[in-house]
Length: 411
Ligand SMILES: Nc1ncnc2c1ncn2[C@@H]1O[C@H](COP(=O)(O)OP(=O)(O)OP(=O)(O)O)[C@@H](O)[C@H]1O
Image (cartoon, rainbow, N blue to C red; front, side, top):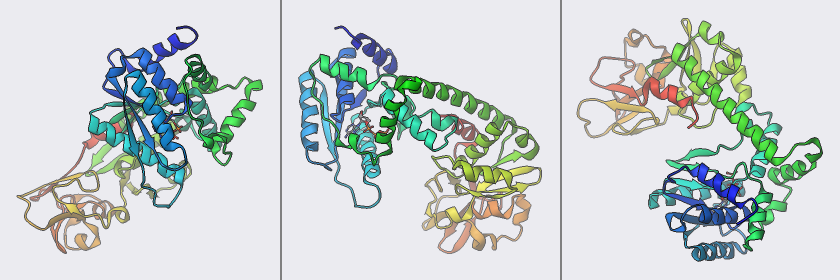
């Protein structure tokens, strides 16, 4: 074995750690992932990991590509499965739907097989292209940190061990070992922003801008991002409090924070209160920070004495109903006397609030109570734990304040 292969094997071993978990690799049949398959076979005993291919059935030859991967895996002694997708309803963007379906299929498959980690073959070139596309969106530190080397995919760790390795190095591995691979015709289709980014990247070499260089910039951005997240978490621990399911930020202390930290803290609070995965967009977030109140990401932000309150927006939960034993709105746990038949959890709303004479005694503003959890039987209000604390029913915000702090850090 010569050339760059030993280094690449060392890179893989370092990425998976000394005792690799039960893992699988996602192999499309393209050059990058065929090289990943080959390198994994050199780095780890082939019988200790699995390979998976999603056949989208979208273009001629996809079944043949899956069969090619199956043959390569069989020859190498790696167990391989093909997952078939046939779910496109003709709506929306096909690429996007295929991508989401692919990750969903692979995640469910991994869960079913007891696999904890799934590795893809994203390269330094993919990372550099992502960074260029994020520049076009005027992204900040988070966007420019591009793809994470590892992230959570519905309880599975998605690992990208080759983010620092160029496509050219992987093509070298394929050639040196006489390995076949399939060329994706989409790679030449300039209607895709990624293909245009790839072409532009090639033009940037005279400036000294290269794929590995940009991948290193992304890695530096990721470190900066992690540092900023920690600082945001520290600021939250110092100033944030929880009231019911709402976050309260004392205005003076909040505005004294560096702007970047204040923005992150507000975005994090909105995500947590609104149970959202994606942070709010920058422009509306900046507009919100300039105004005393507003709505964003399914939340209402309003002044509350000396503080800013981030509460759920009633409109976002108005029609949400679930059995009282379930987590309501993805975050509320209701506990009360033995749950009788027909009890459901739903928002208190104006109809519920109108039935509570002294809701002001709760000390909470009307907006916060409207979107809070209540227990209903048919159209009859049984309990409103946030508006009438101390009753038979209690509502607990899952995760509590510690959950909010933890949500501010990437996982
Ligand atoms: N059909 C497939 N079956 C199995 N793995 C795949 C498939 N398509 C892509 N992959 C995996 O994903 C890696 C990246 O491929 P590609 O860039 O086409 O995917 P992507 O889903 O668009 O990536 P991103 O997460 O950046 O959107 C591949 O190297 C391979 O590991």
